[in-house]
Amino acid sequence: MFAVLTLIWGTTWGAIRVGLEGLPPFTAISIRFAIATTILLVYAAATKVPLGKHPHEKTLWIVNGLLFFSVSYGVVYWSEQFIPSGLSAILFALFPLLVTLLAHYALPNEPLRRRGAIGVALGFLGIVVIFSEDFAKFGGRQALIAAAVMLLSPFVSALSSVGIKKYGAGIHPVSVAAMPMGIATLVTGVLALVFERHREIAWTPTGNFEIGHVYGYRLEPADGGALVTSYYDWSTIGDNWKQLDIFPVVPESALRATLGILARTVQQPE
Image (cartoon, rainbow, N blue to C red; front, side, top):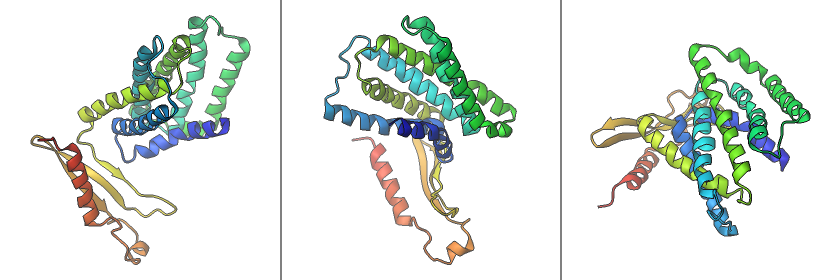
């Protein structure tokens, strides 16, 4: 289990960067957490996990939803538009060190000990060594600002984690994950509507081959809403792919169908 968690957590930074190639940051977060919240709530219902039964539980939902999931992830996704994913991992690696320091003052039973401090410091240095090549890619005023903003993420995450440790005794882990992610889905969804409603959403289908085709949506302001264009562009594929006579792999009928589904989803009931 530890190996699985390490694999998931270690690759999340690169996965975020890949996702940002096709989705704006707040839109990506909202979609991610909407899926995760749905899965966890289904699990909670199936296993009868109690929700909202303990003191402070609903307060922790709000705090964790705003700090750990909305602010922290919002900062990470926004920052990774301008800095390498490895540098994001290095900066967020301050998280365990900050948790250790905050717990020393907030949790009487978890004082800062020399062995623990040394272990956290060595872990941080190890991450720096692993991702040291990304420092060479670091440069520019925008990247510097993004790196400075990124430092907010481990700090608010540490505050949230220590708060859960202090006030969350007896609360099921699913409760302090699913409900806060649901809150973050709403928060980032609103931010996406405000700041990203006219951003282009596109995917470059990839696999074992680099083909060069793009599938996406183009959003433009229109009276009373937005004009959505669904498109598939294979104009840049190589001659070797054109000779196969399989393009477009997404036909016009499929593009029309996705627009129909989108229209029915957002259409106001009469």
